[in-house]
Length: 326
Image (cartoon, rainbow, N blue to C red; front, side, top):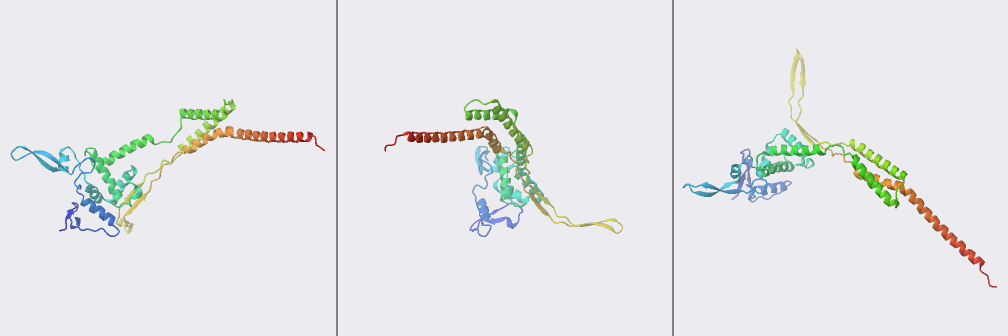
């Protein structure tokens, strides 16, 4: 005998899905298998969230007035515990399919902009897996916080938290005076170690001027960085054409328009070039000593050549003075 599970949405025959002897095939076999797994899952009556059960044992009054243990559904039990909203895995898909295009556009925009769903993994305003996963995540949030707010309330709470954190971190990165002093002291310390002794006044002034200039340029560049733009889904409903009489035979016609779905991808915020800043400041020490060190190396090489030449001349001189036996 073939068993079936009824999906309580429209009450139509199409909502009755046979779950026995079904072999997924065709292009949608992965989706078919997902639905079969969901409908035949023994924990399908377990609420979303962490630590919930499919049913609970409750003490109730028996016919004779004594206390007896009675198993009750999770929804009944949690409602008695103060949960105003109880969500199950099947609810995410049902809610998503009942939304109109305008609501889907708004929800996809808000959910993708706070990281609940990935805009690049969803298709337009389709009720697809990525969208349903986002709604499910919000339902889990609601359940894990006591079921006091709906999944839409959960989205509002997540957006408020996200916007608050974003407000604290948004703004052009700027290196303040104390940080500049730390960078300068660190650079002077490295320069002193490289020289192997105290720096001259000219060397200190040059390093100070270069580090301050590099940091100033970094701050000016960072102030003009783009903040990025959020992804946005949109929907314009179809509109029937109309003709309006203005005066006499003068009329104005409005053409019909088809429904239109839109999607504008988000752009990432520009990041300051911190690595480039570090390389530029490290290069200041090279500017001070690299030329001098090259000259010292050339001088040492010239000295070695001179010493070898002197040794050769001395050897030739000694040889010329040596008596020749005839």
